[in-house]
Image (cartoon, rainbow, N blue to C red; front, top):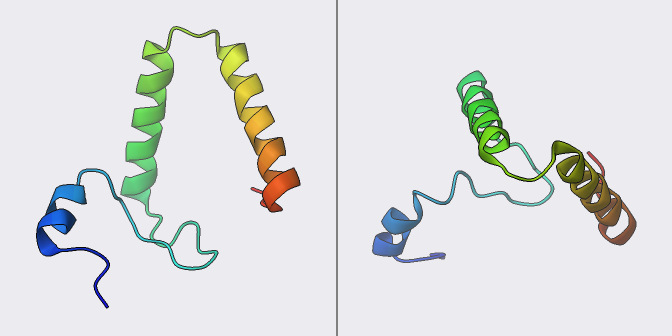
Length: 74
């Protein structure tokens, strides 16, 4: 069963880093992936105009929302 066409698959490479089945949240976590993620996060935090406290509160709220409504915990 195909999920998408080959041309769509090639196009989506820039957006999709993995396909997850079931509850496997981090199927291929590696040192290079973590390093790239860290660099991207630091870059986004550096360029973000919002106060960092506001971001922290938003993340805390979203985390609580996921726990309450989807029974997901990190």
